[in-house]
Length: 223
Ligand SMILES: C[S@@+](CC[C@H](N)C(=O)[O-])C[C@H]1O[C@@H](n2cnc3c(N)ncnc32)[C@H](O)[C@@H]1O
Image (cartoon, rainbow, N blue to C red; front, side):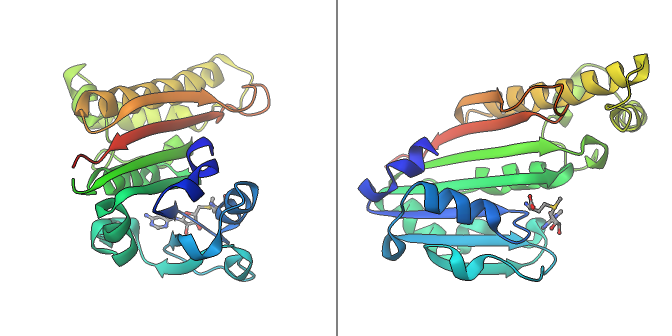
C-alpha cells in the first residue's frame, strides 16, 4: 500500500492480483491509493471466472487472465515487461486468499521477473489454507528436506493444519504448522537472494483468525 501510495510518482505502475476472484482487492487498493487510471495497469489472474466482478470499477487499465498461475509466464505480459524494464517502474503483486500452493506459485511467478531497467517489484500475499499446499510447489521444500522432513511428514503437517481452529492440542499443533510453513517460506525467500525486506506481518489478532499473516517482500530490478 505504501509503495502504491506513491505510484503516481513512478513512470508507470502495474498491479498484478493473483487468485483475484472478483478483483475486489485491486479495486480497493487502487481506490485507496488514488491511482491515476491512465498510468496504472491492473492484471487480474484467476483460473475460474466469477460473476459480478469488479473489473469495470477498477481505476486502472484492467486485463483479466483466466488461467492457472503455473501456466502464465508473467514476464512475457506486455505491461509487466514494459514496467519492469522501464526506468522507475513499479510492479506490485498482491493476493488475498491465495490458498495453499497458489501462494507458492505466485511467489515463483513474481520471482521470475527478469532483471532489466531500474524498477521495483513489491509483493504482499495473505497466506491461508496450508492444507492445500503441495510438496511439488512449496517454496521452502529444500529447507523442509534439510530438516529431514519427508513428503509423508508434509502430508501429516497438512492434515494437522486443517485442525487449526480447534481449541485442542491438535488445534495448537495445526496453528504451529501454519506458522512454521509461513516462517520457512519467508526464510527461503530471504535466502534466495531475489527478494529483500522479506517480512511476515500479522494483520489481525490470531484470535480472530489463525490465518493472520501477510508475507511482504521487495525486489529491486537492477539496471
Ligand atoms: C478463496 S478464493 C479468493 C478470491 C479473492 N482473492 C477473494 O479474496 O475474494 C481463491 C481463488 O483462487 C483461485 N485459484 C486457486 N488456485 C489457483 C491457481 N493455481 N491459479 C489461478 N487461480 C487459482 C480460485 O479460482 C479462487 O477464485
